[in-house]
Length: 413
Image 1 (spheres, rainbow, N blue to C red):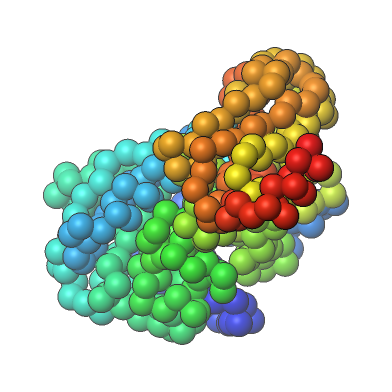
Image 2 (cartoon, rainbow, N blue to C red):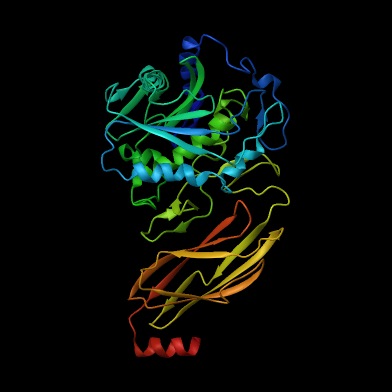
C-alpha cells in the first residue's frame, strides 16, 4: 500500500506503507492472487518502473462513498464528471501501457458506478479500521455491490479527519489506496479527504479558486486520479512500481502538472475531461523509456500538434485574430472539431476557413467584447474514436478605445 504524500513529505511514504500493510495482513484470511511477490523477482524494465507479478484491474468500476456533510457542495457534480471524462481519454490511455502476467492490459475505460452517502457513521475522526468499516458496511448492507473490479473511494467532507498507523491526513498524506478482505472478496478502496481542510499541504500552490470554482474539489480531483491510476496498475501492491511501493505510477509524477493553461476564472488547468477543466498531475508512461505525461497514443494511432499565435493579444476595440495551426503527428485525424471557453455569451466567434481536415491553419476572429481581460481556452479534437483532444490557451486584452490605439490597430492590420 502507499499513500499520496504532500509535496514536502515524500520521504515518509514508505513508513506509511509498512503501517497500513500491517492492518491489512491482520484482517486477511485468504491470501489474494499474486500474494508473496516482491521486488526481488521483479521483471527488468527500461521504462523506469518494474513488474512484480501481481494482477491489474483491466476494466475498473468506481464507487463513491460521500462521507460526512456534502450538502450543497458542487463536488457532487465535479468529481463524478471527472471519472466519466477519464474514460476513453488520452490521459487514462497512459494506463494501457501496463499489463499482467497473462498479457492482459488495463483498458482505456473506467466507469462511474453507484454513489452513496454516509452521515458520520464512524464519527469525525476516521481510524484506519473505521475507514475500512465505512466500506464494509456498504457492502454487507447491499448499499454497494461487492465488485472484484471495483475501486471504492471514501470522500470525506472538510470537517472529517483520518488518522491511523501511517499518520494523519494533511500532515502525512493527502490520500491513499489499500485493500482488504471484505464480504468474502479482495476489495480495493481509497481515502481522499476534502482538501479545503489543508490547501497549503495538498493542493497545487497556484490553484487559486480552482478551474471549477471549488478549490477543495478541484484539489481532490488531482488526488483521485493519482490513486485511481495506482489502483488499476497495482491493486494488490505487488504489480507495477519502481524500487519499493513509494514508486507507484502516481508517485513517480507526484504534483508534476506539466504545461498549464488559464481558465475563465483565472485558475490554472491542464486538461479538459467531459467538458470540464481540471488540474491533475501527470502519470507515468510505461513506454518510450518512461516519462511523466498527460496523454498517450498507441503507435499508429492518429494524433496531431496544436499551436496558437499570438499567445497574448491586445486590441482597442474591433476584431481580435488568432492563428490556429494543426499538424498531424501520425495517422489520419479526419475533420477537426473546434470549441472555446472563457468568452461571454455575446462574443461573436468565427473561423476562416470554418473547417480543417488533417492539417492546415485557420484564423479565429473574435468581436463584440467589452473592455477587460479574457483568458481563452481553445480545444481541438480529431474525429477518430476515441477522439484525441489538445488544448491551448491565449489571453485577449480589450483596451479602451483611444486615438493612438485605433491608429496602431489600423497600422497593425
